[in-house]
Each structure stands twice: as structure tokens, then as C-alpha cells.
Image 1 (spheres, rainbow, N blue to C red):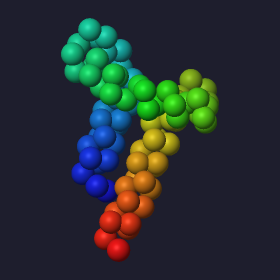
Image 2 (cartoon, rainbow, N blue to C red; image 1 turned 180 degrees about the vertical axis):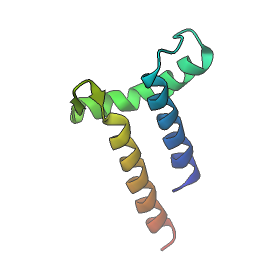
Image 3 (cartoon, rainbow, N blue to C red; image 1 turned 60 degrees about the vertical axis):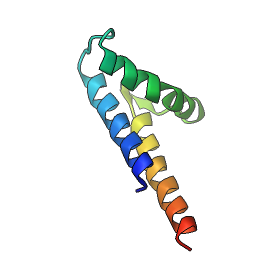
Length: 79
């Protein structure tokens, strides 16, 4: 993966892990993670509503999309 996509994927994973617990919404780290990931995740949820039994699969779909876009861009750049 390209570094920027890899960093964003880690941020999405951190946000998904935080959603399992009840984080303090006023914590600056939690606010940063939500503010940087929510616009993209909201678009993913709007296009493909992936919620089954209260579990949101949009972060997983976003990570797969980041992986594929990163590999596609890497292939284009190194040709």
C-alpha cells in the first residue's frame, strides 16, 4: 500500500476498535478519529448500506477499497 493509504487504513481500524467500547466523545483523539473518518464512511454507508445485526461493515469495505485503489495507483505509477 502507498503510505498515505496505509496510514488512513490504520486510522479507520482505530476508529472501528473504538466503536466497540464506549469512548469519551470529548476526548481529542476520539474527536480527531471521528472527524477524519466520518465523512468518508458516511459516503460509503450512503452508497452501500452494510449493517447486519447492529454491526457496521463499512470500515471493512473502506479498508478493502483503500487497498485496491492503492494497488491500482502503484501499478499506474510504476509502469
